[in-house]
Each structure stands twice: as structure tokens, then as C-alpha cells.
Image 1 (cartoon, rainbow, N blue to C red):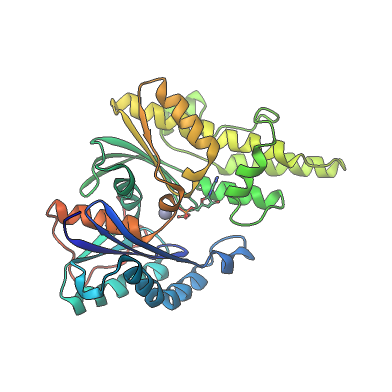
Image 2 (spheres, rainbow, N blue to C red; image 1 turned 60 degrees about the horizontal axis):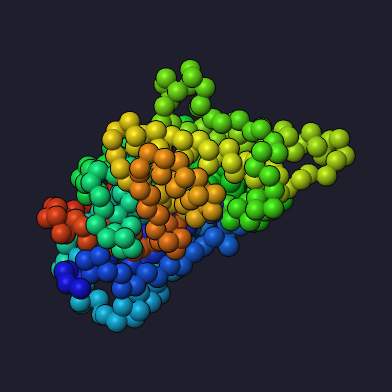
Length: 342
Ligand code: KG4
Ligand code: ZN
């Protein structure tokens, strides 16, 4: 494989990631996670995340270079997530990337975290189809994006108006006494439950809501409905059927996500849907997206789970694309922007 060697740094949430790519070829993807330090709080604690990034940055960088069999002086460009994300966490990555770019005298590329979640698929399935519809679902975001050019033209069509999909999974898991992060545990528990056991609400799906929020999501009402249902059971002294609650909740989330993603693609005449973010690992979401997309002749691309969750490879992948498309590098006063729009 040819092309410049691009190093990518990701620190927007609780994963310290350093990825190295050449073109669409992944050479290293080192990730250090502080997820266990947050587990007892039931969610990511920003201050804890920042400190963990600071401690993990240099070892993760060294591990990535070692895996790729390169030294830092081989790097042709440095890419970094400049937002959106936790402000203090982003600053650690941005500062590290600036130091590298300055020391190596190589260009710096600040990239958008959401666009990077899209670009990462090129490492697995090759060049992105233009346009494509991206459904990004994680603990921090839930968005539908129209992607015409991942380096310069990504248009938000809709997003959650309250909780992110992964956040809903995590909160419901907590209600059910499952560990954090709860998504994989709900996914597993749901396999032995019935998805039609309990009729949980589908957020923003009434005809009236669809008029204003056709491609938006809401998961906080669903979370509250699950909490009420579980509490009523407990108050009546009856056991909570964890598997049925998990399966019915998961179905409510996946039903709305896939319905709206396919609707967005069909209405825009887009023939490819890309799913990304940690929740893309959900087994039901994968199956239902495939099923509904296939009815309209739409193809679905989902990167492997390790590339769906936050990592440095996605940042390197987008940086590599920016170099390939001749985008202007960022200046060394690149800010970290916690609410950076796509
Ligand atoms: O992308 P990610 O690693 O980090 C960010 O939040 O940005 O996503 C983590 C989220 C968590 O909320 C986790 O519960 C969820 O992804 N998740 C899942 C599954 N695996 C991870 N949710 C549902 N089903 C899964 N199998
Ligand atoms: Zn993410």
C-alpha cells in the first residue's frame, strides 16, 4: 500500500486512541480505555477521563508505533479529534497532536469525531460510496448524517433531542442491575427474552412528532417507561423478567433507529447506509437495519465492532482522506471545541 503515513489521536471521551494508517490500510490501532474507572459512577466522569488520557497518551503512542513497526520520524501527517466531546479530554489529545506536528515539522489536521466514525469504514470496506447515509449511535451521540464528502460535506439530518441511544442502553441496564457499560449486557440478556413481551413507547414517532422531528430521536421517555414498568413489578412483589424487559426495550430503540434511517435514505435517494458508534455492535440493530434496508434495495455497511467504538484509527482514516483530497491543514492554534458541528 502507498500514500502518506498518517497518525491519528482520539481523546474525546473515555478512550485514548492512537491509530496509524497508510491510505486505506490500517497499520496500528492502540486503545487504552478508562471505562473501568468510570464503572462505579455509572457513567463517564470528565475529570477522571482527562487525567487518564494524560497518563495513557505516551504509552499508547509508543504501542501504536511499535505495532506499526515505525518510528515517529516516519509519520507524514498528524490528525486529531478537535471535537465534539468532553472539553478537558479533547485538550489532552489536541495538545499532544500539536506537540508532535511541531516537533516533527509535519502538517496537523483537526478532525470532527462524527465524521471520523464514518471515515473509519474505509479501512474495512474501501472507499465510501458518495453519497451515503450514516447512522451514528453511541453513548454520546445519536445522529443521522448525509455524507457527500467525509472531509468537507457532512450534513446532519437529525439527532437525539435528549439521551443518546447508548446512554439509554446504559441507564436501562442500571435499572435492571446489569453492569456498566450496559449495552452488551442488554444485548446478551435480550437473546433469551421476547421483544413483544412489553409494548414500550417509540419516541418521536407519532404523526404529529414526525412533522417536526422526522429524523430526530428521543430516548428519555422510553427510559422512564421502562423504569415505571420495573418499579410497578417490584412494588407488586413480583420478579422482574429481565430478559423480556431487555428484549422489548432493545426492540423499541432499534425499531425507531432503523425506521428513520431507512426513511432518510429512501427519501434522499441514497443507496448505502453506514452504521457506526458503539451501539452499532448491537446484534438486533444490525439484523433489523439489514432487513429493512434490503426491502428498498439499500446496502448496509457496518465496520467490525473494534472500529465502531472510539479509537485512533478512525481519526487517522479521516486524516488520511484529508491529505488525499488536498485539504488545508489546521494551524497550530487549533482549538478543542466540545460542541464542534459536523
Ligand atoms: O462509541 P462508544 O464506544 O463510545 C461513545 O459513547 O462515544 O459507545 C459506547 C456505547 C455505550 O453506551 C455502550 O453501552 C454501547 O455503546 N454499546 C452497545 C453495545 N455495545 C456497546 N449498545 C447496545 N448493544 C451493544 N451490543
Ligand atoms: Zn464516538
